[in-house]
Image (cartoon, helix red, strand yellow):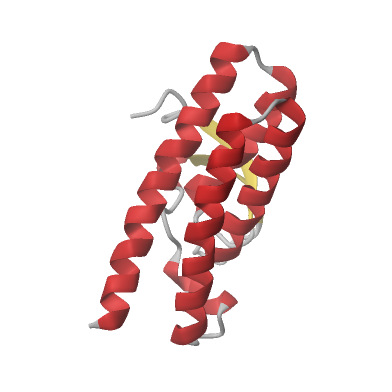
Length: 141
């Protein structure tokens, strides 16, 4: 369990799965690792496109995490912002939330909190990577 888990967060989700749009109070645990319904909508149900988008996300995620590890505050915020947008595109809500938190922390937090935000993003990214790997494996069966 990460330091950020269990906290309440007010945020807007594009669609919470129940058809509710806009701000609402949610638990971090409510965020999906990979929202397959959102992903299917974004790829118009095209499994080939879905595979390509997921593979691109995996590569971009690794690249952004490398940049974040080696960056100062401004480039770190840019990489986190890029990763947040990519994660939202495929429905990796936990990665998106962690990247948004890191983006905010890069301008406000001290080194300890910044390191915690990076660790949270790395954990969410590993979790999403495992979910994506399983989904890609299912697509080849």
